[in-house]
Image 1 (cartoon, rainbow, N blue to C red):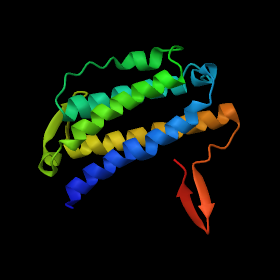
Image 2: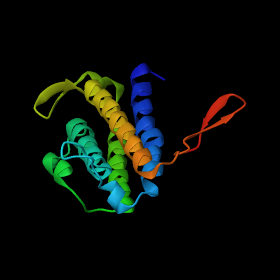
Image 3: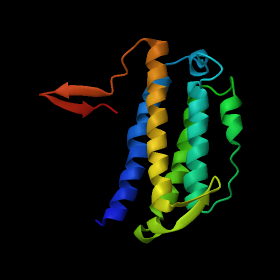
Length: 169
């Protein structure tokens, strides 16, 4: 497999088969109150972060890379203080990632060097995709941390057998 195609495929795998399952585990046992809890007005809740991730991947990949209309209302992602429950938030994020995966499945290696304007910045498709993956990873870590903080439990992502870490998702 060519390097560019491997990069696209690995990005798809991180988003749908690594980060999303971890977010599901982190959120599934939390109360709605815990999902919308924030330590102060300058911090985000898990609910805000999930709304933000869905908005970000749609804007950067579906719209920015794929050419769909950009309908994002970014500030609303952060202004929400209550609303959707865990299953609704997860469905919203899963829907966004399905759109992203479909867009990326059509992306060719040659397109990685092409330029797009996203959030007013000219970036290559490769840069846009790299940004989306690292951005998603950062917020996945925040969601996991808040979940552990609110639930006081281990999330059990890994099982160690014979000295090898085996993912449980």
